[in-house]
Length: 259
Picture 1 (cartoon, rainbow, N blue to C red):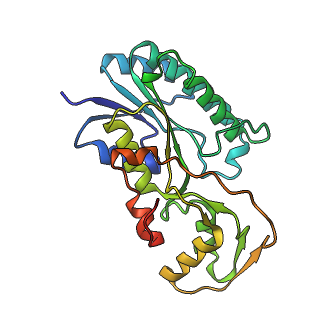
Picture 2 (cartoon, rainbow, N blue to C red):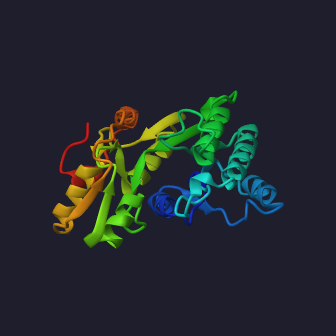
Picture 3 (cartoon, one colour):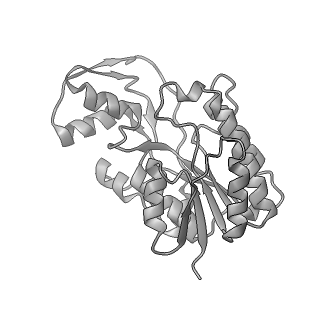
């Protein structure tokens, strides 16, 4: 019998792709309950037991497609819900996969999104049976259809009058297709603990836009913050590569082999 996996956030741009990627090897269930509505979480818990779900993947959070999503106090509602659900899974021997952020390494009290992710991770990884908990950290996810991150939306919407802010900032960009295969590798190999999904190398915003111009045609743009200095950004751990995962889409875009 195929392992039964329930995806919370299956309608999101990562969740929908992940369901499609897993459906040939697993029995996929999609959460249909409104978890922020009274009684919604309790209904989901009953569903997990009734359907003998073995793995829960919790991708849902306050949408980063919304304006000022990182400042919304709704992030704390998702923190509380995720911790509650993870405790239930832990107590019922259900593996729980949560999704973090490359910025969740420390508290940031002025940013509810980062702060809530940090507090959720800290709680999950402190649980007694850590072999039931995975905390997956996608880095700077790129998706052209969703126009993410914001630099892509600005580029395509205002290509002729595009202003590139902070051109020297360097980030670990990773395409959403590679994030999905990373999640699948985590599930296939039953990985637990903290796991990064990133390219493993840093790219400046300027180099990223120059690469877009090579592909989509040259475009003039202005830059702001050219003289601003940045600390080197965090780079994803190569741990996932030990299991054969390779960020093929990201490699093809940048035209190099990620390390």
